[in-house]
Amino acid sequence: MESTKKLSLIRQHLSQVTGSWSVDDYNALLTFYIRVLPKLMQVERCTIFLKESSTGSLVSMYGTELEKNGIEAPLEGSFVGQVLADGKSVIENDLHAKNGYHLLADEQTGFDSRNTLCTPVTSVTGNKVLGVIQLLNTLENKPFTEENQEELEEIAGYLSISIESILLNKKIIHIAGQLDSEVSALEFDAVREGRFIAESPSMRELLDLVLVLRDTPVNVLIQGENGTGKELVAKMIHENAGKAGRPFIPVNCACLPEALVESEFFGHEKGAFTGADKSRKGRFEEAKGGSLFLDEIGEMPLIVQPKFLRAIQEQEGCRLGSSVIIPYDVRLISATNRNLAKEVENGKFREDLFFRLFSVEIEIPPLRERREDILPLALSFLESTNLKFKKNVAGFSPNLLALLEEYSWPGNVRQLLKEVERLVALTRDDLLMQIDTCSRELRSYAERNYVGETVVASDDCSLPDQVTSLEKRLIIKALKKTEGNKTQASKLLNITRQGLLKKIKRYQLVF
Image (cartoon, rainbow, N blue to C red):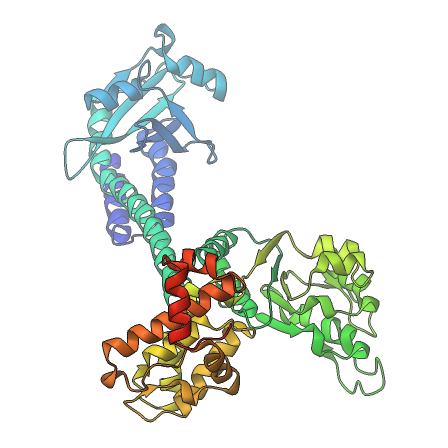
């Protein structure tokens, strides 16, 4: 029979594609069925409905002249819904005499349905119905027969393999998406525990904001004192936004001579000015598709700010010496240690540029306001510096750790890193780092605040010595906090004022 030959062609086609696990390939396969079945079964229309696992509804994106405009058949009041519920084929050759969803569908599609054959597509791994194949025609003299039903059921058996693969592949993609989100969260936690230490609540809030900005490609302004890690936060925003493989171009606006600022950002053509012996891309061009990091944005000269504003607004500009407009497609991440709002008030920064420069502002607190991060940072720096210097310094002595925690760190994280590098460089392998190898600033602070009044080697530390050192440090801290008020200091220490006076006299403390 002719139909047998065509079924053979379908089997041959299936054998060629069942090894593929691409959704697009299976979509192409279903489209193939939609195209070939009307010719094979000598009908006018064919539709394949798939059951949505999440809602249980019957939805089709595959049908004659549907053109990817999905239609949904009700589970009740339609022949395809009946087949889905019973798992048995249905033949109806006089649709005009029947009420149901097919009448509404004809109104929507303009098709005059007379005869229909609906066959279930049953799972090859179980008895559940995955979907329904529906054939339709308008010819009263072309009713569907039991022979047609047998042919379609055989075809549905082969098709079930492909449809089940689609559903499984969708599940795989969904699970992969969930895993991708979990991996992103794990990577972000790794950032927290690795390059960027965030034990303090303020820094955890900051990193949560960085994670939000991953999916929101707005311009960002990072504010904070020198040495707080503004560029590192900028790189985290860039990388978490999915631009890790795209350019990250940092520019320190404070280091650019005013005469070269425009050329630096927008580039120039050969001969545009004296010394321009060749063409050069500007920073906006170099950062195309990625991020342009503007460090110390508050130092940008007023003379170049108008052109800079236009580049941000229009995402395009021209090189010096050229009228050719170059598109940019750049995300701006700016940083400053100044109060830009006050700079605007003082006329040192354009107000329009201030409002166009960023949509989200991030404030990095100084290290003295997040003391929970000091020791984790110091330990992280010790590990990285040991690797850098190829050394094996054992760690920090107890009194050195106390000093690191109490010091105010005016240079913030950058100063702490420099201090750890100095300590590692001046300490022999397998020994603990001590206060006497600290920089002059820290040694002076330790002497003024009695931080270093414990014995040097931790192995020889006696309990009374450690208690004495701790008492001295706590008393000094309480007196500094209360500005020398001994009554208030005694309350902070939870001892009597008379007891505090005795300890001050015993330790010969002067405040």
